[in-house]
Amino acid sequence: MSGHKRKSVGIKELKDRASEIITSVQRTGQAVSITKNNQEVAKIIPIPRGPRERLIAAGLLRPGAQPPPLAGLKLEGPKMDASPAIAGILEDREQG
Amino acid sequence: MTVVYLDSSVLVSIALKDKRGFQALTILGSRDAYSSELCQVECQSGLSIQFATAPSGLPTAEQALNAVLARVQLIQITPAILGQARILIRRHRVGLGLRTLDAVHLASCIEIQAQLGTGAVEYITADQRQHSAFTAEGFFGNLLP
Image (cartoon, rainbow over all chains, first blue to last red):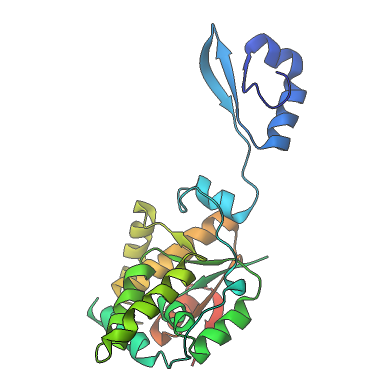
Protein backbone atom coordinates (compact mmCIF):
# COMPACT_ATOMS: atom_id res chain seq x y z
CA MET A 1 0.00 0.00 0.00
CA SER A 2 1.51 3.35 -0.98
CA GLY A 3 0.12 6.78 -0.13
CA HIS A 4 -3.64 7.30 -0.15
CA LYS A 5 -4.39 6.00 -3.65
CA ARG A 6 -4.30 2.29 -3.02
CA LYS A 7 -7.20 1.04 -0.91
CA SER A 8 -6.62 -2.70 -0.96
CA VAL A 9 -3.83 -4.97 0.25
CA GLY A 10 -3.14 -8.69 0.11
CA ILE A 11 -2.88 -10.85 3.19
CA LYS A 12 0.91 -11.07 3.05
CA GLU A 13 1.21 -7.29 2.84
CA LEU A 14 -1.25 -6.95 5.71
CA LYS A 15 0.92 -9.25 7.84
CA ASP A 16 4.08 -7.39 6.97
CA ARG A 17 2.73 -3.84 7.32
CA ALA A 18 -0.26 -4.07 9.67
CA SER A 19 0.78 -1.18 11.86
CA GLU A 20 1.39 1.14 8.93
CA ILE A 21 -1.89 0.19 7.26
CA ILE A 22 -3.95 0.76 10.40
CA THR A 23 -2.25 4.09 11.00
CA SER A 24 -3.19 5.06 7.46
CA VAL A 25 -6.84 4.14 8.07
CA GLN A 26 -6.83 6.23 11.23
CA ARG A 27 -5.15 9.19 9.55
CA THR A 28 -7.09 9.30 6.29
CA GLY A 29 -10.44 7.95 7.48
CA GLN A 30 -10.48 5.71 4.40
CA ALA A 31 -11.23 2.00 4.56
CA VAL A 32 -8.72 -0.54 3.26
CA SER A 33 -9.90 -3.77 1.67
CA ILE A 34 -8.10 -7.03 2.30
CA THR A 35 -7.79 -9.30 -0.74
CA LYS A 36 -7.20 -13.03 -1.02
CA ASN A 37 -6.52 -14.47 -4.45
CA ASN A 38 -7.35 -11.04 -5.88
CA GLN A 39 -10.83 -11.09 -4.32
CA GLU A 40 -11.88 -8.64 -1.61
CA VAL A 41 -12.66 -10.71 1.50
CA ALA A 42 -12.53 -8.23 4.37
CA LYS A 43 -12.20 -4.57 5.15
CA ILE A 44 -10.51 -2.42 7.77
CA ILE A 45 -12.73 0.57 8.44
CA PRO A 46 -12.15 3.57 10.70
CA ILE A 47 -14.27 3.94 13.84
CA PRO A 48 -16.22 7.19 13.49
CA ARG A 49 -15.19 9.87 15.98
CA GLY A 50 -17.43 12.93 15.76
CA PRO A 51 -21.14 12.93 16.66
CA ARG A 52 -22.26 13.29 13.07
CA GLU A 53 -20.03 10.47 11.83
CA ARG A 54 -21.23 8.19 14.61
CA LEU A 55 -24.88 8.92 13.86
CA ILE A 56 -24.32 8.29 10.15
CA ALA A 57 -22.63 4.98 10.97
CA ALA A 58 -25.66 4.06 13.12
CA GLY A 59 -28.02 4.83 10.24
CA LEU A 60 -29.67 7.74 12.05
CA LEU A 61 -28.38 10.44 9.67
CA ARG A 62 -28.08 10.34 5.91
CA PRO A 63 -24.48 10.64 4.68
CA GLY A 64 -23.52 13.94 3.13
CA ALA A 65 -21.96 17.26 3.87
CA GLN A 66 -22.49 18.65 7.36
CA PRO A 67 -25.04 21.47 7.39
CA PRO A 68 -23.71 24.92 8.29
CA PRO A 69 -24.41 26.00 11.90
CA LEU A 70 -27.85 27.33 12.66
CA ALA A 71 -26.28 30.10 14.72
CA GLY A 72 -25.03 31.86 11.60
CA LEU A 73 -28.40 32.06 9.85
CA LYS A 74 -29.71 35.49 8.87
CA LEU A 75 -33.41 35.56 8.03
CA GLU A 76 -35.27 38.25 6.12
CA GLY A 77 -38.75 39.40 6.96
CA PRO A 78 -40.58 40.78 9.97
CA LYS A 79 -40.64 39.31 13.45
CA MET A 80 -43.86 37.41 14.08
CA ASP A 81 -45.61 35.84 17.03
CA ALA A 82 -45.43 32.12 16.22
CA SER A 83 -48.15 31.17 18.70
CA PRO A 84 -50.67 30.15 16.00
CA ALA A 85 -48.07 27.91 14.31
CA ILE A 86 -47.06 26.33 17.62
CA ALA A 87 -50.70 25.82 18.52
CA GLY A 88 -51.21 24.11 15.15
CA ILE A 89 -48.32 21.72 15.82
CA LEU A 90 -49.61 20.93 19.31
CA GLU A 91 -53.11 20.42 17.93
CA ASP A 92 -51.73 17.82 15.50
CA ARG A 93 -50.08 16.05 18.40
CA GLU A 94 -53.31 16.16 20.37
CA GLN A 95 -54.82 13.90 17.74
CA GLY A 96 -52.08 11.30 18.15
CA MET B 1 -19.79 19.11 23.66
CA THR B 2 -23.49 18.29 23.77
CA VAL B 3 -25.73 18.35 20.74
CA VAL B 4 -29.11 20.07 20.89
CA TYR B 5 -32.41 18.57 19.79
CA LEU B 6 -34.88 21.20 18.60
CA ASP B 7 -38.57 20.44 18.63
CA SER B 8 -40.76 21.54 15.70
CA SER B 9 -42.33 24.18 17.94
CA VAL B 10 -38.89 25.76 18.26
CA LEU B 11 -37.91 25.44 14.61
CA VAL B 12 -41.06 27.20 13.46
CA SER B 13 -40.39 29.93 16.04
CA ILE B 14 -36.92 30.47 14.60
CA ALA B 15 -38.30 30.61 11.05
CA LEU B 16 -40.89 33.23 12.05
CA LYS B 17 -38.37 35.23 14.13
CA ASP B 18 -40.53 34.77 17.21
CA LYS B 19 -38.97 35.69 20.56
CA ARG B 20 -38.90 31.99 21.48
CA GLY B 21 -36.79 31.38 18.40
CA PHE B 22 -34.24 33.94 19.51
CA GLN B 23 -34.21 32.38 22.99
CA ALA B 24 -33.56 28.99 21.44
CA LEU B 25 -30.71 30.31 19.31
CA THR B 26 -29.13 31.86 22.39
CA ILE B 27 -29.32 28.54 24.24
CA LEU B 28 -28.07 26.65 21.18
CA GLY B 29 -25.01 28.85 20.70
CA SER B 30 -22.50 27.26 18.36
CA ARG B 31 -23.64 23.70 19.03
CA ASP B 32 -25.05 21.41 16.34
CA ALA B 33 -28.84 21.36 15.97
CA TYR B 34 -30.72 18.11 15.46
CA SER B 35 -34.36 17.20 15.00
CA SER B 36 -36.43 14.35 13.65
CA GLU B 37 -37.19 14.46 9.94
CA LEU B 38 -40.78 14.43 11.16
CA CYS B 39 -40.31 18.14 11.94
CA GLN B 40 -40.53 19.03 8.25
CA VAL B 41 -44.19 18.02 8.14
CA GLU B 42 -45.05 19.37 11.58
CA CYS B 43 -43.53 22.78 10.78
CA GLN B 44 -45.38 22.96 7.48
CA SER B 45 -48.58 22.23 9.34
CA GLY B 46 -47.77 25.02 11.79
CA LEU B 47 -47.09 27.52 9.01
CA SER B 48 -50.28 26.56 7.21
CA ILE B 49 -52.23 27.35 10.37
CA GLN B 50 -50.25 30.55 10.97
CA PHE B 51 -51.08 31.90 7.51
CA ALA B 52 -54.56 30.43 7.14
CA THR B 53 -56.15 33.86 7.01
CA ALA B 54 -53.27 35.63 5.21
CA PRO B 55 -51.90 33.06 2.75
CA SER B 56 -49.85 35.61 0.81
CA GLY B 57 -47.28 35.46 3.61
CA LEU B 58 -46.89 31.70 3.43
CA PRO B 59 -44.25 31.45 0.65
CA THR B 60 -41.84 33.77 2.44
CA ALA B 61 -42.32 31.86 5.68
CA GLU B 62 -41.74 28.58 3.86
CA GLN B 63 -38.50 29.93 2.43
CA ALA B 64 -37.42 30.89 5.93
CA LEU B 65 -38.34 27.45 7.23
CA ASN B 66 -36.36 25.81 4.42
CA ALA B 67 -33.34 27.93 5.33
CA VAL B 68 -33.66 26.84 8.96
CA LEU B 69 -34.08 23.16 8.12
CA ALA B 70 -31.03 23.27 5.83
CA ARG B 71 -28.99 23.95 8.97
CA VAL B 72 -30.51 21.19 11.09
CA GLN B 73 -29.31 17.59 11.08
CA LEU B 74 -32.42 15.53 10.52
CA ILE B 75 -32.66 12.17 12.24
CA GLN B 76 -34.25 9.48 10.10
CA ILE B 77 -37.26 7.61 11.42
CA THR B 78 -35.70 4.17 11.61
CA PRO B 79 -37.29 0.90 12.75
CA ALA B 80 -35.31 1.26 16.00
CA ILE B 81 -36.87 4.67 16.62
CA LEU B 82 -40.37 3.38 15.94
CA GLY B 83 -39.75 0.47 18.30
CA GLN B 84 -38.48 2.86 20.96
CA ALA B 85 -41.52 5.09 20.41
CA ARG B 86 -43.81 2.13 21.07
CA ILE B 87 -42.02 1.50 24.36
CA LEU B 88 -42.44 5.16 25.32
CA ILE B 89 -46.14 5.14 24.49
CA ARG B 90 -46.61 2.04 26.64
CA ARG B 91 -44.74 3.74 29.47
CA HIS B 92 -46.16 7.27 29.31
CA ARG B 93 -49.42 7.29 27.30
CA VAL B 94 -51.63 7.05 30.36
CA GLY B 95 -49.62 8.83 33.05
CA LEU B 96 -48.16 11.74 31.08
CA GLY B 97 -50.55 11.65 28.15
CA LEU B 98 -47.64 11.17 25.74
CA ARG B 99 -48.83 11.35 22.13
CA THR B 100 -47.58 9.50 19.07
CA LEU B 101 -45.64 12.36 17.50
CA ASP B 102 -44.09 13.38 20.83
CA ALA B 103 -42.98 9.77 21.24
CA VAL B 104 -41.19 9.83 17.87
CA HIS B 105 -39.26 12.95 18.90
CA LEU B 106 -38.36 11.51 22.29
CA ALA B 107 -37.38 8.17 20.77
CA SER B 108 -35.11 10.02 18.32
CA CYS B 109 -33.31 11.63 21.27
CA ILE B 110 -32.98 8.28 23.02
CA GLU B 111 -31.40 6.76 19.91
CA ILE B 112 -29.00 9.71 19.56
CA GLN B 113 -28.05 9.30 23.19
CA ALA B 114 -27.50 5.58 22.69
CA GLN B 115 -24.83 6.45 20.14
CA LEU B 116 -23.24 9.50 21.76
CA GLY B 117 -23.56 8.65 25.45
CA THR B 118 -25.61 9.72 28.45
CA GLY B 119 -25.85 13.49 28.80
CA ALA B 120 -24.76 14.12 25.20
CA VAL B 121 -28.17 15.45 24.13
CA GLU B 122 -30.09 18.50 25.35
CA TYR B 123 -33.50 19.49 24.05
CA ILE B 124 -35.41 22.73 23.54
CA THR B 125 -39.17 22.68 23.15
CA ALA B 126 -42.24 24.88 23.55
CA ASP B 127 -44.45 21.85 24.22
CA GLN B 128 -45.18 21.35 27.93
CA ARG B 129 -46.25 17.74 27.58
CA GLN B 130 -43.19 16.86 25.54
CA HIS B 131 -41.03 18.60 28.14
CA SER B 132 -42.57 16.42 30.87
CA ALA B 133 -41.82 13.28 28.89
CA PHE B 134 -38.22 14.33 28.20
CA THR B 135 -37.75 15.03 31.89
CA ALA B 136 -39.29 11.69 32.86
CA GLU B 137 -36.76 9.96 30.60
CA GLY B 138 -33.87 11.75 32.30
CA PHE B 139 -33.04 14.35 29.67
CA PHE B 140 -31.94 17.90 30.48
CA GLY B 141 -33.42 20.68 28.44
CA ASN B 142 -35.40 23.88 28.18
CA LEU B 143 -39.11 24.58 27.95
CA LEU B 144 -39.71 27.91 26.24
CA PRO B 145 -42.69 29.89 27.56
